Amino acid sequence: MKTLHGSLFLVAALTALAPATRAGELAAAEREALASRAAPELSAMRGGSAASVPTFSDEERATLSAAQRTAPDLAELRAGDVTLTERDVEVIGITLLFILVIAILV
Image (cartoon, rainbow, N blue to C red):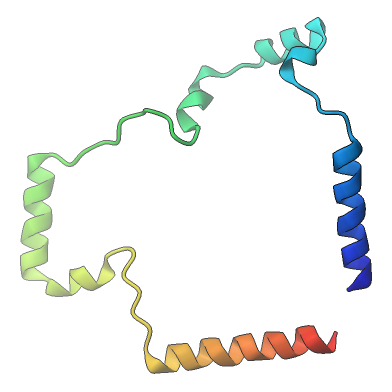
C-alpha cells in the first residue's frame, strides 16, 4: 500500500511541475496537422451538443400504448427501475464485507 501512495504522490508531483501546454503554444506545423485531421461529424458526439433527440411518431406511441395495455409486465422492464430483494441486499453486503477483509489483509 505504501508503494501505491508513493507512486500517486510521485505522479502528482510530476504533474504539478510539468509545464502546461495550451493550444496557442503549438507550433504552426502542429496546428496545421491537427486542422487537416479535423472531422466535423465528431462535434455532434461531444457531451452537451445541441443535436436534437429523435422523437416517437404518433403511430409508434399508439403501438407502445397498445403493448402496455396488453402486457402490463412491460412496465417492470423500464430502465432505471431498481428493485432489490432482501436476498440481493444480503449478497451485496457479504460481497462488500469479503472485499473489505481482503483489502485489510493485503
